[in-house]
Image (cartoon, rainbow, N blue to C red; front, top):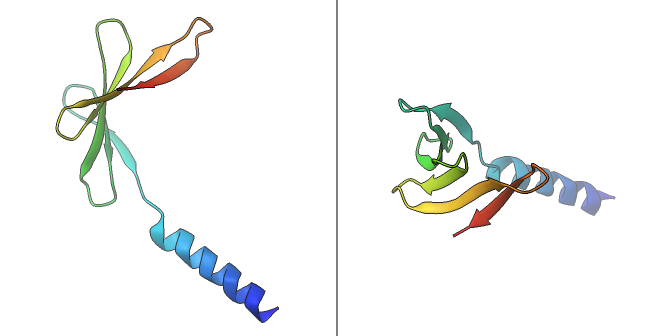
Length: 79
């Protein structure tokens, strides 16, 4: 019983301490910006001319695209 309680306590502590806090905000151009808990930009989401959502990293390189399929669901296509 002691081992079980110790293991569960350790797992709970690990999940809490290593979890990542992500916040979303809008920049001046209306793009969605994803930031970590220190305020560093991780990804920027913008729309292209066709209405697709383009995911870019903090350097402006395109990481992937979210497009709608024939049923209207969003599908992620990595680059």
